Figure 1 (cartoon, rainbow, N blue to C red):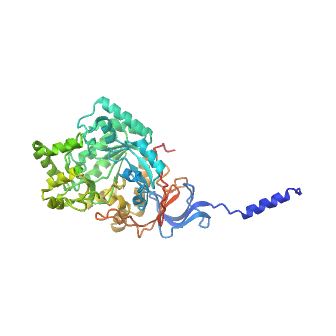
Figure 2 (cartoon, rainbow, N blue to C red; figure 1 turned 90 degrees about the vertical axis):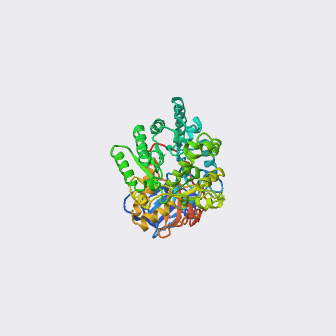
Length: 517
């Protein structure tokens, strides 16, 4: 028998419990969606339950309670896409663009920075600002060979000595211990172009001891220097000698001189894989590459040392004939003056081809190009890829999606939906499962993002809900900043970054390389 003094307390407790709202089963519940889990397994309809930043159920009851309920009927539910190659640092650091809606509206929840050897030379300050200011997507970073070399040697056009290599190794150790996911190189660009293969191997060995990847912009993607196939072979040799996974960035056959060599690239990669080298690559679906006038046309030896020395060389009558002969060859590699379009928004020539600029300035194309370089060196799109090469590389199981996104090129705003439309919808080169895998799970496995890239219990809730009928790139070369359509909801670390429209949330995190359990 209950003591009389206990009865009022018991009644009060029962009444409070009866009046208190039930704790919901999930923070977010996604129901009725066709789930592509990031693997190559067939999609299936199921419900996903999320608590805090983690997926806790891949078979939740449709009648379960949740703070936020998303009906994904008729839509694709995918892992958030992971972009292994961007030039987004400037946008992330700017408080007016740090939400990176251009990536979010493509379904991208994680981006890499520091590619092409650029690294993050002001790493600690950048990370502190990213974490204090906030970002839309998650951000991972590479150590940069070019950045490290420039700290030690400036823009010197010579071989590094043993002491300089040792100093570069120490700087790379610092980056890797800070959480870099690997070493990136840009062996086409100065100062990386001045490095020997042995120098890169010495640094790649350091990254390998930390479980990193060697990510490279090849020494040549066309007929520059020793050519495309020699550059692919060099990259494979670096990876083999350093015992490190190789990742080839924006894989392509650039320029008519090498169109069709995608067949040979595939042969070299397959031979490397068979010999035990771990090789992967990323690709964007656009026919035009993106770079600057100087990178496309000015010989590397001319840009060595400093901008002032470049200007001196370009103005030196004694060097004029040699420079213009080499520039003419580079212009032909790029498809001529009609194939080079200025995309830099801050240039007075934006939207004009080199031929049109030549007419405005009333100078031959090469002289006009030099003037444009000296007046600001804007970014350009050059139409140098053959669709057959793009298709042939796209279907390789070791190729993933990557935007190489930078200002002025539509790939910054539309790479993922364009790849979906081109490869899945229009040409049926791959299934939806293959497209999702090459944009999420394959990327996570390649770079060691241990709990991302898949929709699995215990994984981070980076999730996209996509209407496949309207997942379309709106960006074009004429209007490169149009947001993509089709991503109806996007969760980053369990928080809604898109819910019909942008939520203006900044749920992204700076990711650091850690061993997978």
